[in-house]
Length: 113
Image (cartoon, rainbow, N blue to C red; front, side):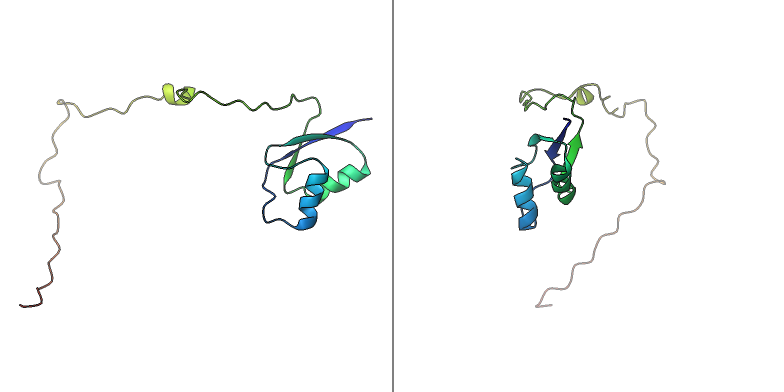
């Protein structure tokens, strides 16, 4: 008989009590839990009831392993990111006419004045 795999992707906190009970009956207790169940009408009905909390996985996909990256590990995307260029002495200076004047806010008069 075929099996169906489901993974809990949303929290059970604050959900309908019946939906929490359904997820628990499938063996899904916390986010990231996966379960393999027989593919029959009862299981399909349970999964349909909590379809907004779970995703169905292909049966032949390998089980996810909890792997933590080393704290000093940097993603490859960050390593390969080009550095921002800083202006050099060759850059043309900005003319004073192009600079916008800065308006100063007037201070309110003191209480004694």
